Amino acid sequence: MIEVELNAVRVDLRSNTPVLLLQEIASPRRTLPIFIGAPEATSIAMAIQGIQAPRPLTHDLIKNLIESLECKLINVIITELQDSTYYAELTINRGERTFKVSSRPSDAIAVAIRMPVPIFVAEDLLNNEGISVEVLDADREDTFADENPDELVGEFKQFLDNLRPEDFSG
Image (cartoon, rainbow, N blue to C red):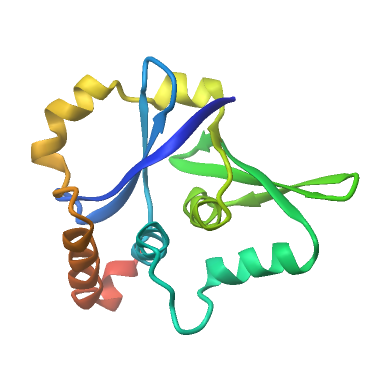
């Protein structure tokens, strides 16, 4: 497992889709991009900015459940990519027992940011899907929005305002 950090949540301008950028902490600092849904991106952005909803959001509820059940979230692991779908696990301890709970990466990251705990990516996955920082930097101007968090939240709001039911048809 290779430890990563949440480098950014951006909007891919070509597809108007939010993308998580998980960057390797140690060299060579590869980045794993994972496309996610707008609600999860908004939840992650709110947690990063320290914005509290008046009532618990789903990811706040998960955090509250873990704590109320006297458990401890140990880490989040992005485990694999199958048929263009990423998979993740939450590692949770309760006393002497350890539980692995399957999750979507976006939900796992949203909880990890709130708790906060380390985030890992399976080595094979990062070797196969990771992008070097130099390539990402070269593409950033064309692919990703500005890093300003206020602009990011504004883009998410605009994205949500323009969603139509047809956007979800397969």
